[in-house]
Length: 462
Image (tube, rainbow, N blue to C red; front, side, top):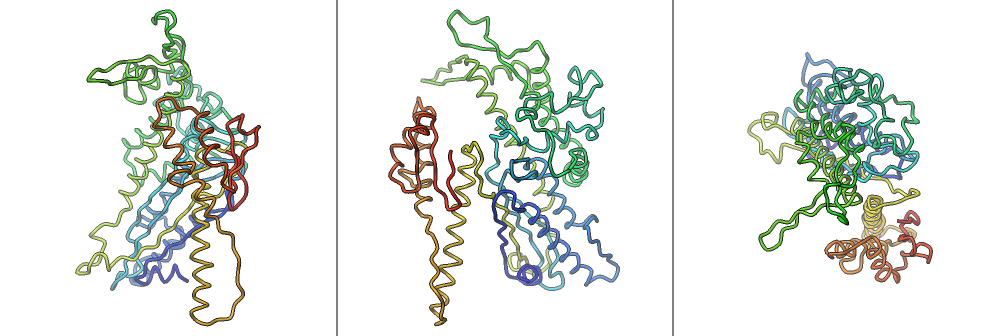
């Protein structure tokens, strides 16, 4: 009822979709968006004698453009986890704008998508029983990409010169967990075709070509190896990219850079001091970390570009707003927030801490604005009611976000030190957080650099 009023009236509304990981938030968000798009289409039909109702919103209108953003975002932002075969590995806020005044009331004008906390660590480390992002499996699916396109992106034998298609087992990025398929029966070839149909609406051929070149480059980059650099003097820890198998050439070609530039970026670091620029060769271990950083930064930039391009195609255009009406007053918005679910895996990293922190803060908001606000309203109106006791999770939030002794501030402080390691960070956390009632770490956990935070939803070991 509220969403219908938001479409037909001038009052802005928000819909919060929350729940544990695997509870169905992504599907619910899509249902909400489709429902609002259908309501908009009905409004248009009511004012037109020639318009035909399209239940699937498969026409050429803005409703279809908004809905077709879902397959794209799912391919590049969703992955199989222990609990969920189509888990959103990023948070998103979708703001749908509707005509609020005069004859166009209720018409969907456009939308904007905002995202946060893309889980980039998944690109370099995937837990057993999980997969990387769907897109990598879709481009390698047997009945997905055409052979000509596979050769173009060097996803066949001999890096595009042969005709045998590469498979998910050929790349470390898609095989590191030993899990290759989905349990829900969804075929990656089918979702690949849906993705390309959706991308045809928002992206030009050249834009799609650039996107798939980057995706393919990252697949090949996961197979890069480093060897000791024989050109270095004895005792030096310098390394070089192993070039004999052709992998580095494929990565450089697909990224549009020279092989020399690629090798320099991964095997050396530049230090500027007193106007001088010094080049220091990296060890194999540090070069591997540099490759991980490059992979995460590149995919993060790609995802940002994709969202920006989608927003450009579905943005509210001035010519779609009723003429002669103040722009602000003529638009009503319905925002849909699809937040991460609370997560606790066998191995929980920084991303899980950020996700659970968001849920912790959301829980406090829920407590304040539902329980506290409602009880205050009852008191003002003199309504007889029973006191409801609910847990206050401020201690858990302070443990994470306190400006002096919170985990985040400790991490910031450690990152500014010249010689910080995982060990120095965990030691600082133990020293500053041990008195917090929501923090725990046994001797065994301390020896392994682990600790426990007691969240509102349960204990999680990081």
